[in-house]
Length: 170
Image (cartoon, rainbow, N blue to C red):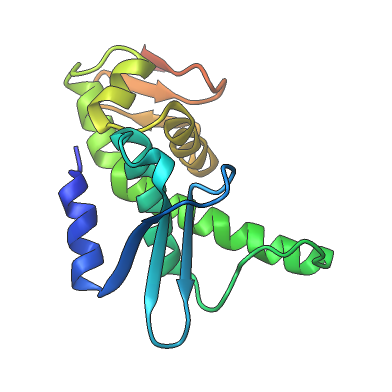
């Protein structure tokens, strides 16, 4: 598992200002660069929920790693601008899922039978169910079947269900 401290280390090394703040209920995190300072605001309501905090913080760091400029959604945006914001959100989320659930580590823990259910995976990586599902969707977009050792494959063709099958010889 990637520790929460590793996320905090990124913030420190990159000189990102992080603060808990009473954001609107629907906003769990917010990243902003004003030309001088990089800032991440985390909704103070999730401060005691480490699983959710890790996911939100990783995504906001994902914005730092993948986004240039202000992508704050506005109430009245043209369709093209809304698509651009959605694309940047997706890039940040992909970075976050790849960081907190590295594909090679996920495959290794499945192969080593460290986990046996979706709940076990979320517990092992200390992430939310929705976050794990997004990781699996990103993986499925790359390929549907992943080798997990010499004898088994991970099948992602019918998410949210995942299957581990024995390899078949033709």
